[in-house]
Length: 341
Image (tube, rainbow, N blue to C red; front, side, top):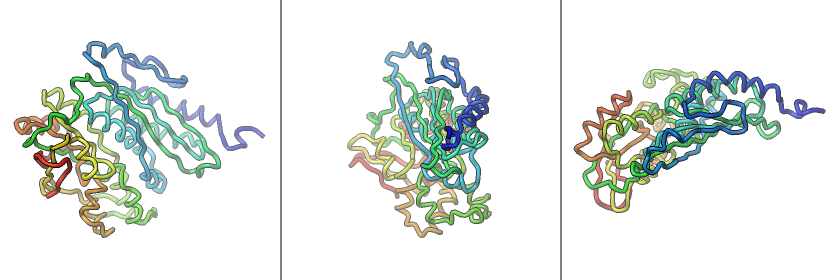
């Protein structure tokens, strides 16, 4: 008896690391002091020593049951983008620049080519956000997980000067709310998605005219990463007062998280076009409108608050970062919360 016969293939682990090196190398930053394969990742803070009060911001998340679609479609090269996005978008909401990322893959069996496909997506997400992929772990769990399945989670660290943290504290009445378009469902609400649509390859390969693609491709579209857009806003001299990543809980849970006490967000639903994937989901699942807005991003992956006089410049900055902005609402005095009208 040996470890391989017990279900853990050490050689496959070595092969996975060797195959992923190129993807990891493409994410490197000058501050990275360690190479792939060590016990930890080292990152120099020397470049940030001129900040008055350098402040680390961290975030961790996974991809959730969206992974089920990746399994069914046998497509694993974009799910890593989702994992990075879920972490770096959160820390970007605080005004932080992502510095580095670590991933964790737990699998029933280590198939090196599949692991490398996953990591290639992680590396792509890191490149999109400017974060270095400085480490990670692939753990084989025979007997605990099915051989053809895996779970994926990640952890990101960013930095911001304390005086530039986006806290929401200076949000005022008549400030405006700008939303940035999502790429679709992103990485939340898939437990409900899987109840609405048959999780069968034939159903996922069905082409829908209104989607312009197959159902599976529309649902598996990777989560947008908004780091560059927020950086563009900052470099344009625009003060972002509050920022919210629209994830699980949709509008009703996430928008109030950026507000101070005594401020209320009013969102105009007809200020932008809700993408057809959400209309199809609501129709097929007979899901009430409030539940849709309480579960999904409904086409806005991130929203932020600026002073009314900065609205036009903010919209232009977002467009310059190749994202699509919408002026979607205003701030009013009142109980902390959000109204959709």
